[in-house]
View (spheres, rainbow, N blue to C red):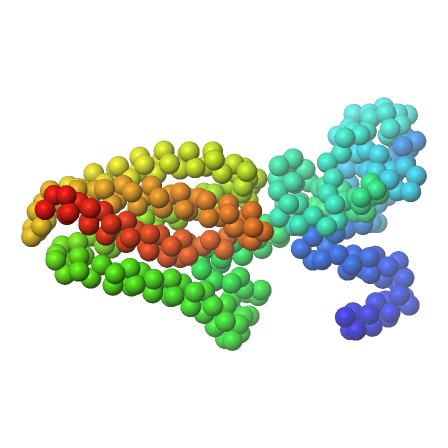
Length: 356
């Protein structure tokens, strides 16, 4: 901060206007619309004619004083935003027409403290090349262009990919990140996931007696855990993507439950059929019917429950104010592994108790 003030003080001596702009912009967090916006835009009064506006755009283009000339923002007293005129409307307008006659008064705007993810979503949703930023009183502060948003999208996508890979996002590039930073950000989640896998070991320990009776059950443990983990990861990925695009909201949880129950049950039946056929050809001490039934029922139940968990966990995290991407693929897999083993051994105990 001290170094920044020294630079600004030196800049004020030679370029006071630029220094003032930098000081104002630095008051906003980097990941907000205020941190992304530029004050260099075309803003004119409502009484300005079309021909005057075109002349002003031509002048600003030659002097590089505007970030974009595709929109003219019409402002009134106190820089309050009144409307916007596109370059197309200017070209089609009559030379003597005033901007207030051809402007669009319903303007899609951003607030300076809007998060960059919302900024990217708004520009993508309305398909604009730029959006104006206004304060709570409607005063025009600047604009965010699509070029700025491209960088945001890449940054957010990188962070989400790293979170879904089971690690804390890196702040620098791969080769620029030091060993200690790598160790901390990768090791933290590895330790958390390791303790999650220890729960899996505890579940297996609880069913020692069942496994001692027949080792045939052990053969299908990897397949059942993998099926559940994959189903949960699929649901999690789809929901996280949907929330990022604004297609899914936490309030839609009941619609998600109904959809995932239906697809989870259908996929469960599909894998249960394959598992049943595979178990039928297994030489077993407990009987083909018992083993096949156990595997089939377990697969159907695990896949259905895993689909629900994978879909609802990101929504729960979003509701609690956390980043949904924290519910990464390894984390979902760890949760589903424990759940899958409990279901498998529970079904085995029930089936063997009824059919033995």
